[in-house]
Image (tube, rainbow, N blue to C red; front, side, top):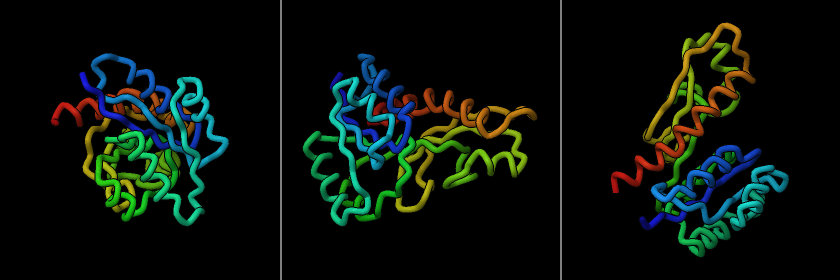
Length: 187
């Protein structure tokens, strides 16, 4: 199987990154993680890149031409898929257009509900019965692109934001790889 080169964008702990690196070692998994990008110098996920000898790029999103530098790296590593895994910056319309390939994101709610930040707080405040995660294509609007897959669970009356986060992350570790397989099964 010829694997597609993927780049994972992170801003924090990198637990989805760790999961995708592990899955990418499976012979039948369609991607190989070739680059990790972070907008946070102290993102713990960078340690997973280092530990697995995966090149990483720290970007300063305040720098004027950072997207051009990013595009150069994506081209250099022949990246066919970008996975946003807890990446907390919005990619510009120009970047998405210039990149021109698949960009997917994992979001900790059942979109279209609760776009943006503070998802678990919003879920509890709205007294939702069910929540979960969504993997979707990234387009020019926030958490808006075509949905690839969703996984859900029922909320217990004792669940708080931390418990919801933990339950959701467990589903993310299943939904993200499933979605990647689904994308490349079509091609």
